[in-house]
Image 1 (tube, rainbow, N blue to C red):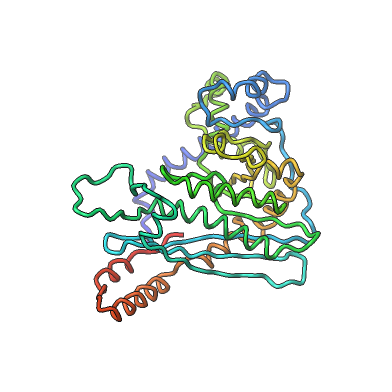
Image 2: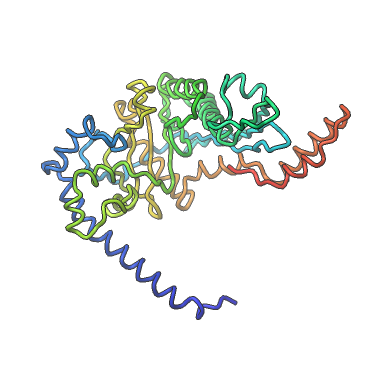
Length: 384
């Protein structure tokens, strides 16, 4: 039985903090409405400042920040696609990685059956470094005392490879299941900004090429980020309206984008559209593929929705907004299509166990026993 009496004093203090936070957001809304007005000095400075301000995290304005757009009516018939990936990471005994991908396609309002596919790829260290990290040590700091010259695959390298291959899987399923003259939307999980590692130019190049292929195929694509921790819009507010925040009793450094748009938006509304000023996007993305984004009040959370600039120029934002909200309702707070892709891609514990049993059998045929290694590796949970 839960002993509530023991935590009652702590619960009281926590409730006070929750109430104070709610009050703070209530005070933030009228301040934002005043700052975001089209004719405000704040907006004028924001339009002027990004090229000179040292903080490159702050985005460019594509639309007036005062904009709040209710959810448009979604198409009666459309196609929605997603893809996701999970992995078995290498460990100190087995220098390899396994990636498992899902591909999902739903034809909403149509008679076609859903398409659901999964496939796996296994990479040994030699193939891994030859194709994606040529001449690159797996970590910025090498172990100078190591007695072996064999490079070890690092987990962050596996994550970088998975991000690129997920986009490729999404492009493939969208191309193969689109229906002529029917709206289609491809949804990725996370971000369209390729946060590749040092010396991973091959992965970055492949990612950006795949993103461009969506444009060439005229398939709108977006990335949905649940519970974003970004502070890009908050940085603009902090830099240009610090005095206003302090007068309202709000510490600028405590603000996040999610807090700003939780206060500013109502359920179902999207924010204005912004352009990312990420160094990677600025240096490597072509103009049509620059990353735009808006924030969406999804009901239980504020989500960040990223998409290429060409989708805005071709008028696909209303489609994105309406389809994502529809998918959120189907998924009861999280996009159903992404949820299904997660589930299909996940390497379950039993799957991982069977993989190592099969690997051990193959090795035994060649006179090598890996029981200890497989036992260690199989204890780890695959992370999606």
